[in-house]
Length: 225
Ligand code: IPE
Ligand code: IPE
Ligand code: MG
Image (cartoon, rainbow, N blue to C red; front, side, top):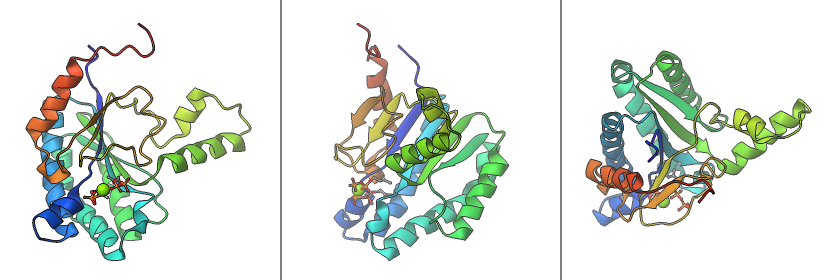
């Protein structure tokens, strides 16, 4: 059994959850933050080293403006509320994705958070924001090409947003949807993938532990027998 170091999550189902409660999709996003808090605590308890959260994809720009800005606003509020705590809990924050289209104020806040938590060691939370895997791979290849190096697996790894982060041991997608939606296509090469029916706001610590327990029973062979 290989102890899991890195869990990546596609936190899906907020919108449907909000509507199911006869409220708005945004109400579901707000509730989703509570699950994020619970899963961070559970990750610390399980001594994970990396937790990667898909918060906004390069495709999510197709959503209505009000929803997009609501998502950015919740992230901003979360940082305002939690920054001190993140440091106290020895948590490091790293942003993955293309900052260019994200509102300046949020980018500044995120960069400040990265700087302030840079030396923290207990858990690294990677926030995938305006992240798209194809964009990430193309960007890496162009960076390598510029230097006229021959493309290699190592060089690609070093030029991805996830540079220095080990590949996820586990990928969880909630929300009863079985696809990757342009998330970590390169890095998930040998990850164990768990599609969970529950919507993200209904996903509890116990559900997270269930996935980790299932993972413990898997013999990972990476192509060997
Ligand atoms: C959250 O779930 C994903 C984010 C973009 C934050 P959704 O907003 O995709 O919820 P559903 O899939 O529409 O229910
Ligand atoms: C994936 O969820 C993106 C995030 C969780 C941030 P989506 O709900 O956007 O995925 P699709 O569009 O249904 O594939
Ligand atoms: Mg969705």
